[in-house]
Length: 194
Image 1 (cartoon, helix red, strand yellow):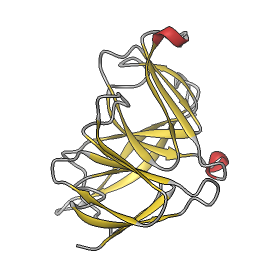
Image 2 (tube, rainbow, N blue to C red):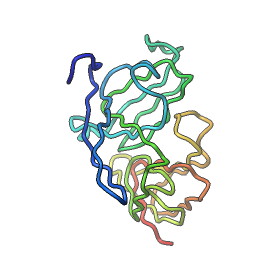
Image 3 (cartoon, one colour):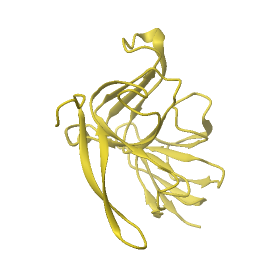
Image 4 (cartoon, rainbow, N blue to C red):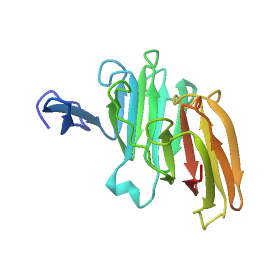
């Protein structure tokens, strides 16, 4: 960590390949801590990656708030994450609390789709990680024998963002629509069937 860099913040070197040449850029990563928005941490879309120490537990926590004290009445939205995910930090947020994960800023205009056909716990972007289509749902949770799939209109953790929420107690199917922004999965595995 260099001088003047906030605690919990590190720099990771990543290679970005263009059609003409490979370029290397520094990409900041924010870890456990509380950050002021647009001072310590820019507003925008972030990739949430569970940290190694908490992957065994499989839980991370992110909180958007109106104050750096992060008292209960100042919480705008918060969530537990049970897998790698995405979150949107708004310019109107004052602070963001991060625990058990790292945040890396995502530029959707530069993000190259990496569509797969199988998905586990986490939040996956439609059109980038997961394609619209029909998926089989198989439970992976063996504690409560239940799983869920949530189709999302956004990623601010607001109660207004779920478009559809389905709980599964056995095998089933879900249709991911082109207008969905993201899909959240917990305790289940999705496999594309069409």
